[in-house]
Amino acid sequence: MTDSRRTLRPLSLCAAVLVGALATAPAIMAQEEENMVGTRSHDTRKVDWDSLRRDEAQRGRMDPQTGALLEAPPMVAAAPREELEKARLPVLLPDDPDMVEKMRLFAKPDHYVASLRDENHSVQITGTRITQGKLGTRSARRRMEASGDEEGFVYQRTEYGCELSFMRYNVSYNISVECRKPDSDARCTGKEYIMGLARSLV
Image (cartoon, rainbow, N blue to C red):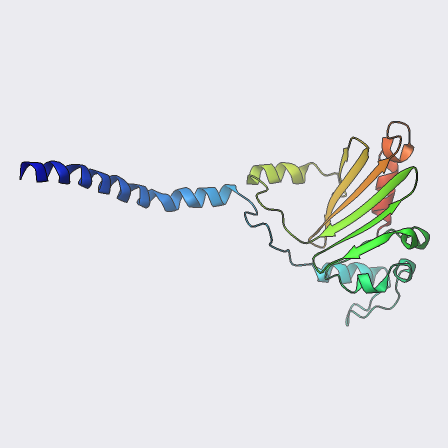
């Protein structure tokens, strides 16, 4: 009997600790979920098509009632139609048919990449509605959102040029410019060129 009681006492203690841990686990998990953003890496955002239709209607290119396209931007004719038709998100490209005609465009339902390269510089535009996994804490996300300017653009210099990121229609867009001579090429030394590209997107 003595040996039995000695055996049961540690087991009872372990059971009590385990029950206590299980009781606090939901609260700990809830806190972790509150602090983490985008823990799944393959979620997709819902495109805000209503905002896009309103913008296009204000430009006179879309019927605000039916959503029918009244006038396609010239760059649409310059882009490969078979790639545009694959996308299930707004494909924003520079309002410059000559530039778009030189670009290589690859599209999937949830993202696209448009790129142009010559001997002195390259431009890449990407759009995605795929959310990134484990972006970090909510406070980190708020700091990231607050770093944008009044137009919502987040600019940063890179080793070979610069990048510009922004959200539009609930889709994440990024423009990257790289130069052979990033310290002397005006397209990479300042904001003017990349900001001009961003403002010209249609």
